[in-house]
Image 1 (tube, rainbow, N blue to C red):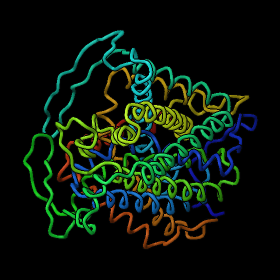
Image 2: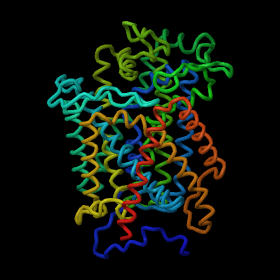
Image 3: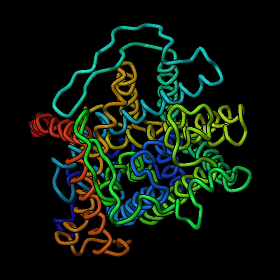
Length: 518
């Protein structure tokens, strides 16, 4: 090994008797973590917004194809980095090693501030909302302590505020769930993995069941005629090269007409969010058995499964419900996919199949899905803060492991505390809108780091080399770059705030780095 292959984390001398992470996650558990972290509630909800944006059955499916291609190329590319650097922290380590410690810190900072904790908060509150289907007293309107309402404030292209601060029964349920999962994951990665395996298996089966039902008993003539007939003419409507689609620029901005390449990029905010968190397995690399093999393989298997099921679920929805709908329609069929009640397309599809029992069935499926998703995010996120602390860029206590269970207890606790704050402030929903763009930028930078490391460390051991290199990684950067350009132009409310949150981390990095070198 040359000096150029020595990573910064090697410079920190860990006492020989200090607890170390134990490799206990096998291939099945690793793949379950990928799948479980990806599948939350998005696939059951975002379909309506994508349908309104594309106004075309073909482009609706096209949006999921674009997301699937990006996700799969990302997984294939990350596999090389994971096999090359199988350490706790994953993507944080890859950015640090390829582009420098500042970029690694900015990713970890954004992950802690919003990406991981905000998603945990959103998923846990969603669990509370859907639990309210069975227990009506659990609701976002049932306040136990209502502190204040922050009115909407217009700042350039953004609308800030418009949120309620306080404790209601829905976010109380979410807070209980997130602390429960944090505590459970303190008692060893095996227990967290067991929960993940059970709930991932259950949610995968329930989503697969939804697809099977949609393709069999759920098919109806009205939806088929509206979306696919006659002779697939309806399927391809508004999907031609010359077709134009209206897009509102920013919040309250003008409506402009764009082509299919632009509209497919615009609607990626929904499909990419639903497919995000596939990289979480890299955070736990220090606890994966044979990580040089199992992490790349789990990335490919997990993302391939989810992308396929998402595509089939989207197709299944169109076999049950017409794409076009009337926002004032009084029936599920009349409202269609575009105007499903509260955008709950999955619920609408099951209601069409099973009438009043549909909402109960979907609520049960989403409870399983969100619980498993929250567990995967909780387990993985703390490992990044652990790696940051090892580099002297986070609280020192977060870099310590429990002497018996070998888990980052302090990282799990601080993650739960910040997620609780986001739950109480009601800010997580807005923050998640802002970070989709930032997360995509970090994915691009990480894959750019693949090229950098091939140049800087050509002789470093690479048990697995990225499939399709350099064409596929370059294609990812090109496609993701195009989406970022389009979002900057047409959806500034999703882009500039996210970049602000990232840049806010620069002075924090300077503080931590000076403290570490002192």
